[in-house]
Structure formats: structure tokens, C-alpha cells
Image (cartoon, rainbow over all chains, first blue to last red; front, side, top):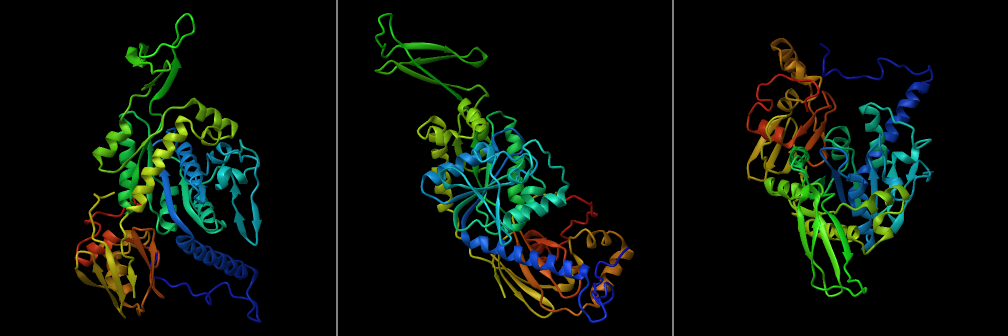
Length: 345
Length: 119
């Protein structure tokens, strides 16, 4: 077995030229060490230049992490906050497309990467900006991904931000672990789930991940929660019928009774994917429930069109739901415990 | 991964010549020697050597000859610390739970052998 305590002495090998000038290899190593040191210093600086850092995670794919990340970012930005999104989903980066930034190219100045600026001034960094074409696959093993993530953290000129939202691929492996190790003072994790009971299992993994790394779970967001249907009822003469009871056939044959308002309008929320998985998970694991985001086909369309639902319809049901989640999130962040910092002497 | 244990918060770490004083939020203060710390290094090179008597004694001998100086200490996220000694292994990431168990003279691995990749 090799000695784990052996000391590498540069004078033993890789000797430089006779006049003690470093060899090309040594020069390269020195430059790499210098750039690593600069990156580390930049990472430390982020602690003070970014007030709140929030990780958005889920135990499984397809629950709408990027939708929630972009929704939170835009909703916070609408309130006048300076917001950035770091899209850590290296192999499936979607955030730029959702924000209409898919053809953007990053600007690099003096070794610092300047993020793209999207709607509401939200700054965005994503692997998608570095791909030649949107269908180019990123076929990287863990350590390469780790290097890219550290660059996203250390080499990006974020400036001063109120919030940095970090969007992850599903799971609890390389990506969130690297960020949790590299970024100091992360406020915590927002867990995105869907209403099914199986969400309990997936949420539990993310909650335990947070506990293992001594991070706060800021709360659970239940996405795709209920599909809102609305309409108006009138008689044969076109007169609106007020206080009239309607029966709406919902999923699974469930009949919903709704009553029209004074103007003949009616509205019902159909639980197409069941309901309450996220809320139950938050109760079972004693973590906050941040709220429900309804199933909104407009979100899908806006994701494809690059005009986010919150931007296209700032007073729509999705925008209102995100505003509710953000309100709760901000309450939790402001009531966060003011732990004393570790004193190292 | 082992069961998650609630660990008090580490409030203060004072580096001395050959050991450090750790003050925890439960008001307990412990002195932990750098030798003990390095023996229980959780890195992928040091950990397996504790699984075998011969390599464990080799590990101890290697640590015994180190002339310790105050290490550089840096936080790893919000869950661990990293120590950089002028000599010896600097790869291990020590979770606060591991440090607390070392302070209490417990085996931080519960006597289980090292499994590569199991974080």
C-alpha cells in the first residue's frame, strides 16, 4: 500500500532547467495553482456579495425544478430584487430556453465570465451557453462536471445579488454535493415535488441529503398541483346565470359541483395528478410547505416560446402562485436563525 | 450512509501546537490531538489502511514521525472542516459529526470497514 503521508518534494523530480527557470510543465502547474487559488478567493467573496443562496432540488426528474427555479427568480426579481440563476444541470440545461436566452453567447473579460441577462434583469449562467448546438450532448464523467461547476461558481462575475437560485439535475449526487462544498453560507434547499404519494419517498431523499450536509430545508413546493378550469354560464338569450349550480366531471369520474358568481363566472380546480403529496411530505418530515403551483399548460408553451408565463401573464394563476411561494420563502429566510459563526483561532 | 445524528454546533476551534481545543454548543470543550485527527482521516487513501492491523500500525508510525504545526482550517460548506498540515494527509473532509465523535473518543466509523464510494 502506498504511504498516505508521503510528502511531495518538488526538488526530487520535474527538475527545471540548469538556470533554475521553471520548465514548461512546471510553469503550467504554477498557472493552474494560481488560477485555482484565484477561483477559491472568488468563491469566498461570493459569501458577502450574494445575500441569499437557494438550492432547488428534487429526488426525481420531470417534477419541474427548472420551472420552479425560473418562477422563483422572476417572482423575486419582480419585487425589485437583484437575482441570478445558476443552471447546474450540466447535461440537460433548460433555463436559458425558458427565459428566451437560448442563442445567447457568454462574454468573457479578463478571465471572468459575464452571465447572460434575461427578463426582469435576472442573470443566468448555464452550460447551454457553451454548447455549439442545443442538441449537442454533454458526455462528461463526474470530475469534469465538478470542474465546470466550480468554474460556474468561482469564475462568473455575478456582482452583488440579493438572491442566487441554483437549479440542479434530479438526485443527490455530484452536482449538489459540489455546490454544497464550494459555496459558503447557503440558506438552504427548496424541494420540488409533484402531488402523488410517491413524492413522499423522493422528497425524503432530498430532506436527508440536506440533513447530512447540515443544510436547512427551506420548504417543499408542490408543482403541477390541480388544473384550473373556468367559464361562464348564460341562458338562451345570452343573459349570465348567477348563483347557478353546475356539475363538472373531473378525473376518475369525480363530480365537482360549482356555483356561478354574480356575473355567471365559475371556476374549479381539478386534481388531475391527485393532490397533497408535497403537503403530506412537509408534515411527515416537519419542514415548511411553501405552496402549490397549479398545472398550467401555459407554462409548457412559454417554456417552448422562451417567454416565461410570469412575464407573459404577470397577474395569471401561475404568477400569483409563485408570488405566494416567494412570500412564504422570504418569511422563512428573514426568520432564519442567526447562528454565530465558527471562530477559528 | 450511517444514521444521521444530531451534533451540537461547533462554536470555537483553537489551534495549539499539537492539538486543538473544540468548543461545542452544548458547552462541552474537548482537546483533540492532530495525531488522532490524522489517524481518523476519512479520505479514500487513509481510510482503508485502518481496516487491516498491519496497515493501521503503518499509518500510526507514519503519523508519529510528523512534526506538527498549526494547520490551516477551512469550512467545507456548512457541514465539515478541512485541515491543511505542512506534512501529512490533507485530503480528508471532516464532518462536524465526525469531529464531535472523535472528541468523545468514539470510533467515528462505528468499526465498519471502508467502502469506496460510500460517502
